[in-house]
Image 1 (cartoon, one colour):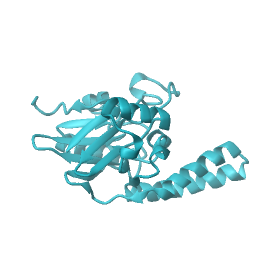
Image 2 (cartoon, one colour; image 1 turned 45 degrees about the horizontal axis):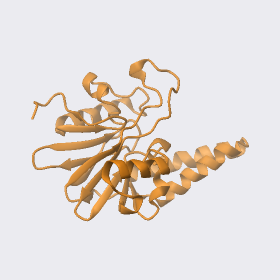
Image 3 (cartoon, helix red, strand yellow; image 1 turned 90 degrees about the vertical axis):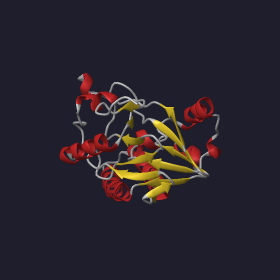
Length: 226
């Protein structure tokens, strides 16, 4: 099994930097996992053309080489480039799929009643993408298991990769940046802060390496160097 960081993400606003308003375009860190005959792309958060270029630059692949997409959470920051992979199978944790679906339908109804046509069009695109996402199985490939991390969103779900010498967790926004891991902080925008803290603790307990939702890979500071 191999893994590669295709693109390093960014937070729209970072509370640790005392940012209260959006300061940049948020997008998720995108990771590629190669396991047996599967090439799983996690959180395609960049626009399709940009992501296609990143795939070429980082792993010498084209969008058609990707067999599966996995979303740690369902939001535009994780799905922006997903249409470049219409041929692939799209996966999301079932709890996230169901929770987001209910919320999207409610937002769409409110926007429609208010006559906000631009928002309606964007939400309709989100609904269309969500409908094409399948509920992810517990195991995506040998050594690649779902790792539910609820809190920031109700159904947020990472992946745990069991390697011969270490364990790697792709944490999504459960740990958005390395600084959150270093400081023992969970995002203050979490839907359920208590659950987010439990999920944070779960990552710290099992991971040697962590790929945060919006940052490069970091070493678990509670582990010894290896």
